[in-house]
Length: 478
RNA sequence: GGCGCGAUAGCAAAGCGGUUAUGCAGCGGAUUGCAAAUCCGUUUAGCCCAGUUCGACUCUGGGUCGCGCCUCCA
Image (cartoon, chains in turn blue, purple):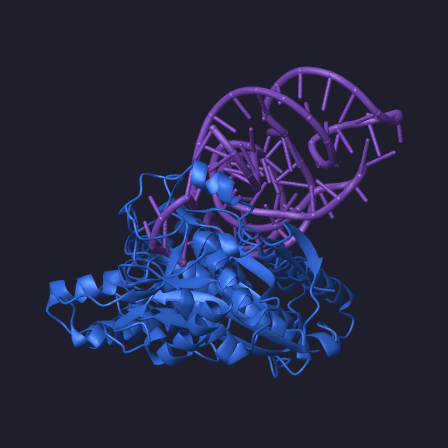
């Protein structure tokens, strides 16, 4: 039985889908006014892994990850760039897709954009008004009346009193309660037509929180299984989503809330405002994308993850060990397919002759993933399996290593491509390396070991490691 | 100030009330012309103080330190 840590109840719970064998999952995605950084990479990779595990476990998954394409920062950035909102957001949506693809993140089933769901948002705000939970203030904004919603604070564990006590000096004078938040922002004269929509409350644009409530219910229903996002969205964003959706629909919104931990730099949260962030594309210039993915998945999704070159180097070394094991065994035949119950119904490792050990490892892998997506433990199983591959040279064990890793979106490339790949420009090309290896083999045949060692050293200095095997000499990049 | 999370070996990171985590690094051996890779073995743990227990890294209480949310943030 799959267990998930639920932020709402603060403990691990058995996962029970609303509809048998079906998972409906919504994850808060990006606000597209800039390139994605490593924190965004973590959200995308983590929930991609979650989604893959559900599929591998035989569930039908409906995965929604939204795109916020209208908000203050977007408006500001577009103005600075003298660019239309649409051009700006489309540019960064394309960039996001490039980054996600590189990291092996599968496209969600839906990527709704806020600007395409304004009618649904207005409808929802109207319901809230009808239910006495929303009001239009003197400044024209429509606000949510937080004190009218009983459950406010249940996700973040905060009470209204606590929140008021810690309140910073505020400006929003037209709110009935300082904690009320905006559902509909009335348009300002100075704003472009592109950011104004008609409504019964006058021209304006949606507040941030309402888009997720509206798109979630439109695509997944008023009540769905899982809602995820970064831990910083727990409050106020997700708390407000609950208030909106439950206030409008009068039923439970989400059963399981999942929040991933932050990426840190020097023990501090990586964030735009601190300016200590690295964009995905920046990191991919230095490190292979699969190394970055592996780096993310070898930590538990709820733990903090410290970013540094040393940690990436470490991840690279570890992933190299896995690919090296795969390299030593001839390419495997058919892999158990992902999904369609493949991994689970035909027991992971089933059909492996004399592979008792592999079967145990497969069971351990499943147990780890079922325990709140414990990828560090699942990765440890991968290493034990690699050891088994190295020892037995079993094609089946290698096939299983690839099959299990596929659930994490890892090890799907040709081993040689990984080991010889180079994200940096320049250096020796394959032809030049082959030529040097041939020269060294001649030297070895002539027992001229000094020359052979000289060639090897020469290659090592440009980052090429030679390995003599019974089948001949192979090479990889250090 | 309010609320929450965490503290594991040189680094990273899991499970577990008693029995090998795992990766990198180190050390010894096998293998190799020498290496690399691999295999076998092995050294470094569990912030501090109490308590529960036959037994605690694991449970309970207190403390210390670190981090986060309470404002936009993944």
